[in-house]
Every structure is written in structure tokens, then in C-alpha cells.
Length: 519
Image (cartoon, rainbow, N blue to C red; front, side):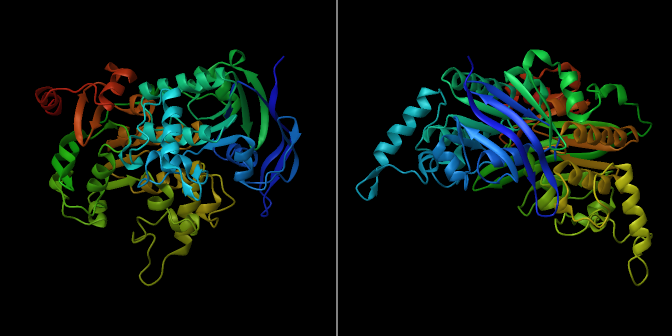
């Protein structure tokens, strides 16, 4: 007979502003199972996990853990009870060693001092036990993204967690790293640990789950065994409609020829090391060029150099529609036809406490129809913002709602709507669907393809291989600041092949890369 380790009954969460995040949620989690929670952004997944982990308190309903009703005051209470959580954005101190991050707040003592020898021994044994392949004395800043995630998981195991919540754990991993993680998760399951797995990647949900619970608008739409649901049926439960995964069917040939974006011999050094190493490529008008790579291999520096946000010195040239923009300001680059969807929609893409109407015109506020001779044209701003809210299906109270009141997917739609409105000839899309639900992601994908079909050159930078492969016409892989591979036809390469280049296990010769570049 299966043993229930965690049970939620009629759990409801209503915030002070009247927003209902969860309503009458009933779900149980069995000991020794991998249980996925699926739903759109704003469906209530995060709030539900916060209530389990003691960060939020239910407005009503009961949470029963190991047979006892619990009222956690904070996350420390949950941790002491045996619940751990690995957040999507890692909670690590980069300048600390692995062992210092793991033991922080629960240090083994020898008298009044920390017993560092014992800490290192215990943490290394824990890493070795689960084949994490970590040197616990190494600094976190020196680790790959995949290894940092292992440190987060070890933090929970060090505290004897019996139930582990994983929030989007594969969002920045290669297929090979994901496979390794899944092997480790299955080993946790075999030892009787319960895993709550939150992900927008439905293929992975199907691959790893024993059972799946779907949330929509804060309400459970049922809990199912893995075998009961196909991906199509799961998608329909999440967003109440089907989606089209084959983006090639929406692509059309553009009549606009030539190169929209050209990057030549871009090189950047930091502390004597090449962050960008002689990077060259072109993005043709009417195509999407995808750049794949594990986080931290030069993609951020490349993008910031192209859009004019990089404060570091670099050599090489950046051409937009034949104009060298290397020394131009952000505004001047925009005037040449460049638009930018940034990875950090809150930090770089929007001003969180300003209303939608201000954010949605912020990159073209000086346009004649928006900016009057003396004052801003408030009627035109109101009309344009409402038009874009409707066209881009932004769910909000009205155009005066602050950005911070929107879900992640709707914030991203505001950013995409603003950049799309400028009718760019070159669009740089950096992680355009990171952390947003499948419905919003599909919408963003269609808009990028529309730009491509209308003749824009689209540079897509994404850690999501499915996104790169489904949208791109050609693909580049970056590794340690250089181009490790060019693929002239995105349909001719598999995710596992790309993963090998992303990990540095494969690399094309300079001649192969040059040949593809000049094709």
C-alpha cells in the first residue's frame, strides 16, 4: 500500500489585494514518487510550493505532512521537518566554496568553532554517494551551471530532506546533463525520497514522472498517472487548447535579401582571458539564426555587445544593414533598425512599478505620433497601448496596471509587443521564453516567425534547445567564448549532437566553420 507523505486538502490562498492564487486545492504526494506539477504562469504553482515550504501561509485548508497537520512559520520550519526546495534561481554565494554553501546555517561544530574537516568529509561523501562528481573544496564561481544545481540539491540532502521540490531544474541544462539529473532523481526515488518536479518542458515531465497534477487558474484539473496522459492531452489540460509544435509550417520565404546583422572577429578579454574569441557570423534578412550554448559561454557578452549595453572594450565590427554600429549608442543602434528582447525582463526589459502604457512605448516615446511638440500625446499613448494589449493578448486589468502586477508570461508579452511595434529590421531575442508557460511561449514564437517572414533578421539566443531547433533556420553553438559549430540547416542536427558541442566534447574545424559562414 502506498504511503502518503504530504496531503493538501481544500487549500486556498487569497492575497490582501483580493487576488486568488489557489482555490480549494486537493492533492496528495506519495512517499518514493516523482510527482510533477504543471500549469501556465499564474496558474498557482509557485504559491502552492511556497505554502508547502513555509514561505506563504494558506488562507484556508489544511496541509498534512507525515500524518500530522503542519503550520510552518517559515522555510526553516519546513527544512527541519525534512522538506527541501531547489529554486529556479540558485541561492548560492559564488565566492564561497561548495562545502561552505552546503553547510551554511547548519555547520558542524567542534567546541565553539566550525569543524571544517568534518564538514568537508561529510559533504564529499554525500557528493560521491550520488555520483555528483563535485570537489566540495572548489569555489562555486568556478562551477558550471549543472554543477551549481547539484550543489543546491546537496544542500537539501545534507539536511536530510525526505521531500524535495525542484523548480524548473532543467531550464539551463544540456540534454546530456538532463539525463544525468534524471538518473540521480530516480536514485532518490529508489531510496524513498519524494520529488515534486515543476517544469514547462512537457516531454521531460512525461519522461520522469510517476504522477502529474495540473493547475489552471489556481484550481486543480486533476491528478493523473503518467500512462493516462499523452503530451497533447496534457497540453490541453494546461491551456485548454492544442498547440502546434512544428514551427516550420508557419515559415514563408521573404522577398528581402541581404544580411541584416553581421558580426566580424568580435573579441573581448577579461583578466587576460578571452570571453569572446574571434566570433563571426551573419544573420540574413528573412531568417532566424539560433545561438545555442550552456549559460556562461559568452552569449551574454555577445548580445550586450551587439545591442550596445556592454561596458567592456571589444575589438571587431558589428554591422546592422551595412552600417557599422560598433561605436554607436543604444538609441543610435535602434535608429538603424535594431530591437532587443532582453533575458532579464524585470531588470533590463521593464520598469516594474510603472504602468503598462509607459513600458510599452518606452523605446519609441519620441516618435511623432506619441510625443507632441510640448507634451506627450496621452490619447495616442492610451490608444496605442490598448491596441498592443489586445493584439498581444496581455492579461491585465487595464493599461494603467503596473508591470509588477502581471505574471511573467504577460510581462514578456509587453516587452515583445513594444519591440515588435518598432518594426525592426534586426531583432535580437535573448532567452525570449525563459520561465514562461507553453501558451505564452507559443505566442512569442509566432511573433518571431512573423518578423522573419516579413524580412527581419532574427538572432535567437536561447538555452532551450527545443526552442532553438524549432525556430531556427541555421544554428551556431558557442563554447568558452568561441563558435564551436555552425549548422546550415537546423533540421539536420539532433539535440544530442548540439549537446555534445555545448559541452565542448565536439568541435568543428576552423575550415568547416569558415565554409558555413561564407555559404
